[in-house]
Image 1 (cartoon, one colour):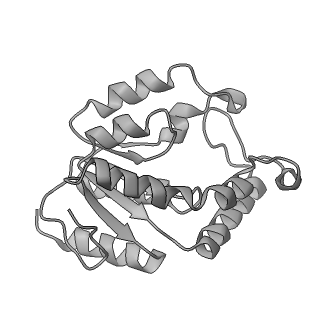
Image 2: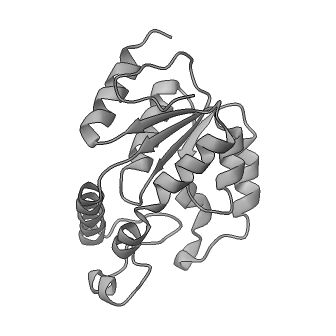
Length: 188
């Protein structure tokens, strides 16, 4: 199956959808939109992974196993321990393949907004203090910069392993919006 792009329409209604991309690219936002559009559940995988105090939850693997065995869902394709399982069960992968400067602008803006508003993310967690970007190697802004090149490699490997999997590659927020708008206009 060749990679589809923003101009391509799906020939089927997907049931199990993954959204891939660098941290801060908009995976969760798009996943929530697609779940609403398809009338299915969005499982925000960060909420399953992060327990209080940013400690990984011991039930993470079981929770992913449980929800991904259901007939329909949309989630983000992340966390190396569950990526293979999710990829095996998905029938569509939407890849936000945005340029680094786009992702960095988005992740910085999102991090600032969340911190200023003191937004609760998952299980009582909040964004770290902004100065931590200078001392914490895994601060989300540094993480996004460092891991930007990993998603294209993962998607290429997945396409090789599962050539039948439909993959939609969106290269900009504008392409993403055009694709979702077109999807919403498609007849069921």
